[in-house]
Amino acid sequence: MRFKHYLLTAIFLLLNGCMTQPPIKTVSEVNLQKFMGPWYVIGHIPTFIEKNAFNAIESYELNQDGTIGTTFTFNEGALTGPLKTYKPKGFVIKDSGNALWGMQFIWPIKAQYKIVYLDEAYQNTIIARDDRDYVWIMSREKKIEQKTLEQLVKKIETDGYDIKKIRWIEHSN
Image 1 (cartoon, one colour):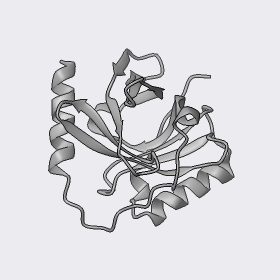
Image 2: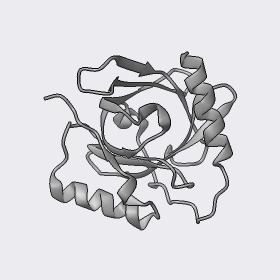
Image 3: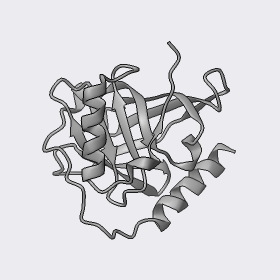
Image 4: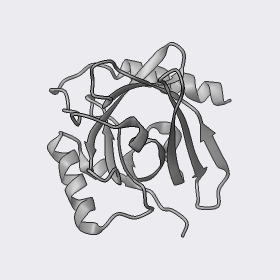
């Protein structure tokens, strides 16, 4: 069943690959060691597998071969719903300042993963795609200060996203 989700996600991402807007600019440089670890998904324009996600956490681990081991976990449908876990692999694109990755759910397809915002303290980030179909606001904490959240949403809107599509993720206390 999990393979079916990976395959459908990969096909959907591939079919939506026609860019109609200019590319979104990534941050200039990402220190991968500092970026690794858990990130709470605060809000997103979700893929179909995460439309009912609660307690969503994306964790990264730098593998010895330079790839990024990724673990995406969430409870489906409710804060206490069944736990779902996905383990795509990230591939840092050469000469991108480590800010552009390919995220592979199934071989050989790699979905675009762009780090378009990252604060200096590596506490808040935005992951986007040039197609403006999906976006993720993530933080090291379960909640973001309101003023910071408003700035992140404004960045997403400025990058050409329809912010009315953002789904806010609830996390257990």
